[in-house]
Image: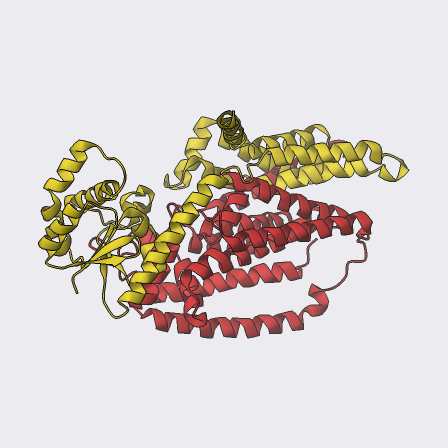
Length: 283
Length: 299
């Protein structure tokens, strides 16, 4: 029953979480046009209507995306529509009309209408709807930053080139700009690749894939094929990392002892305990 | 409302800051200046700008702060609206300050500023890795000035880039957004303070509600307020609209330039230009229709 309720609430959160402010704008525009309220701000209402129609019709929307260099997603073409301003303008005029006669007892009608409008506006949003996902991300961020801070404190004078699990590398350069990486978070967030012409080679992508297997190896289960390939390529990946300049490698503390010993042999260094991780340090 | 208000002056000042940062950023990129030198030059220029701006405000205070005799009083309802608006704005500032909903996918501003500070150079290393660039980066992005401006703030104050970029800048942008919407409210309702208060309250409510989705105004301001697109949608565009409605085209042109300095646009043709052009055409059409109507009445 609890699971059912949870699914129902998540389903509702998903349902109400997509694009309803645009509908509110269309409602505001209809009110402005049909209630004759457009006369005071003709140009604004006309411009907003035409811009909104251009964003909705596929051909004009495609042209607007071309105008926006094709780099931006569809939703960015809506920047051309003064959505917040005109919706607030329409709602202000609507409420003013409702409350005009409030002093003469008209509040009995105006109050419920205002509350209904407020409810309609609130239902267009999704406040707190993805709180669970956010909390998980924030916990990961806090952990990643704490590990990076520990690295900075442990070896303050060293020029460190780090190889670590994804959840640490994700926040490494934000938390400490002195750290260097052989691959950054743009390897798993391709939208970041628009900011540079540099691309990653096979060695970097292989190393990234291998580190993901290492993380899985510290967990309860991983596919057998992946485990075999990870173990078979362990020395090769360790050598690649050193060739690329890595001098500090972090593994989750839960990796099998055999892996730890083989890494120690391949790198010629002893693993050090480092919180929930073990560190292979080459300086 | 034709005259410039204090709100107009504040936003124009913000645009002047962007312009100044852009000029020194370009100089540093093309002359390969050290980042520390660039930050120092920006500091000196902004100090001069601050002195000049204060002087301008003092000199024009009678005009800028003059009371308009035609205005209606705010009334009890208007005061309630203002109080509710202030509560909403404070709640939003706290929300931004807590930073639980920060959206960083596809954005590398903090890493970029960190790399400027550590390497003491502008785009000397790839912000993602801290290694020198192998192939370089697109010029269209290299010319945008926000990383240099934020990095300079970090250099002057000694604060961490993550704190400045993820917390302090979005708070400042949110406040600027309300200044901008306040100016727009004055333009839309020049003689009615109560409606203005209601407009601001509804704007803040819509921003809260809009925090649900990537690309919405509320999302830009509350979840990634340091980005150029957030400054554009929250500050530049409402002000552009207000300027267009008042036929102040030079101010709108400044917004176009400011957008070109902070957002990747189509060779400088961004949203501010499209909105200005659209509003100009709409006003032309409405003006022509009015003239035709008057002509028919005369017949």
